[in-house]
Amino acid sequence: MPTPEKEEQVRQIKELIETSTVAIGTNNNGLSVADMTELRRVLRENGVRLRVVKNTLAHIAADEAGAPAVKDIVTGPTGIAFGFDDPAVAAKTLTEHLASSRIPMTIVGGYLSGRSLTPEQVDNLAKLPSKEILVGQVLGQLQAPIAGLVGTLQAPMRNLAYVLSAPQVGLVTALKAIADQKESE
Image 1 (spheres, helix red, strand yellow):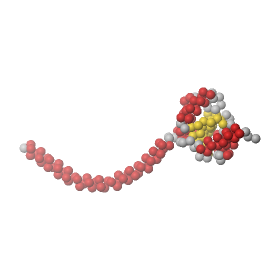
Image 2 (tube, helix red, strand yellow):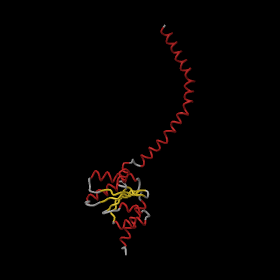
Image 3 (spheres, helix red, strand yellow):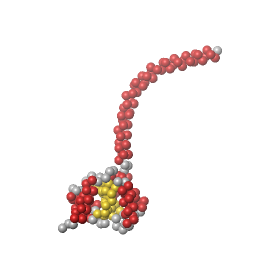
């Protein structure tokens, strides 16, 4: 019979699974309290929440949340980093901190959009630009053909204006040359 504390933990883990955009499983074997505290601080600053979970409770929560693929990232002593905004930010923050601090923690895998990710896929996710940069790149790609079309449509009018103004410019230049010649005589 489950205890009320375990039921509450399952409810909390289920809620984190349902509300997060990405979940990244870590093996936190041999991690000191100071390292864990520092990691949590860095993750929290970037909108990521690290939760150490009991495997059986995480499995139950994954089933209840309708996300059985989460069970793939829960092996051994497990911590799950839940990202709530941009999935790339969560992956990037975690992988960069693990690399820079050299703490003995490995990424087991991830969960994104209903499917499991391998550790290599989590690394690839971390290498993606942020959502804002990607949106800017897409908008730039969409805007380029439109700008080209506008330039093409404006070219005939611009060329006509040059043709119509050319005789005037030529006349002014010729009159100025005649005036300069008379002054020099």
